[in-house]
Length: 431
Image (cartoon, rainbow, N blue to C red):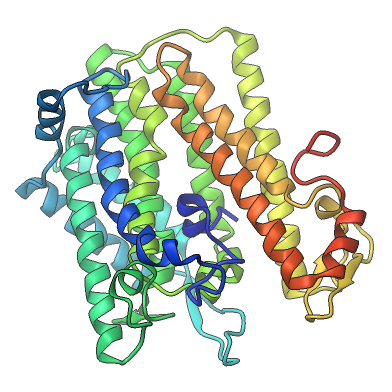
């Protein structure tokens, strides 16, 4: 599956949840505040580097330059608020009433199974039809998302903080939470808040931000054509690669129901801001950069990039589907054979067949291959387009190391036996 927001933004995930059993005292007290104060300005800084620096990193060297940089921070506008409000309203309507099916989630800690409406695939294409119609009728210019990117970023950020505050207040009224305000606001107090028939956590993970990622890229294509009279192959590759990723996630939406975010993570600022802001406003860096950076790619480079992305996608998708299906039915064949696994003393099953017998996190290898394929079309004039692949490499390497330590502590000798059977961590034969 596409990967949980907590995993792709903060390096969290299954071993560390809202129970906080593995959180250090420093993280519990200062970590949430530092992230909430630091990540929104970082996201805005990346936008400033694109719009004001042409992709170059702007490094202020004096107090005056810091103030000048701060003065460029985007702010909401009436137009951005109308656009973003309409966008979220459209996604809520499509999720609530669009064609789809109901699917029961995995059992929660209390044994309950919640019903989820799965219609992300139809919502994606319905959204594109609605926007194409609005453009054709002259209601919206095709470059509106590009033109309003900064104000939309500011608006989405305020919306994320506001929604997290409402969730925090709701949890406090219900007597939920740990009594640590910063941590409760950041991690959330309620596991599965539902308003007006919508599961807010599932909605934030899969709809406004994820589909907006694809819409932003299409607007960047229009902006490049409007500004330069052409659409480069590099732009088309990045847009196609990432549209495949988004569409694939929504097509396999059911797989998200088994992730830690849905089953164990409470809904707070971390998941809300990650889904509404981080994903659509940072994962679009490459296409945003390419709007004003036109260069040709030789046929060999095009073939290599397509091959790299498809190979990464195949490993990423197939390995995650194997794990998802094994969780639902441990007896289901893997590559035509009965799956092998280690049953731990804790009751968990550790799959050692298929991709999961080749490396403990081969899905990370696919993720990183795709990340590199998304960045390489931007060329090498500036480092900014490579933010995503560098960030994901650091995050996933750290996550794998942390997961290994947590699982060794949890499973003891069973984990050691698993590691003897599955020697490699991410890249077979190398690491």
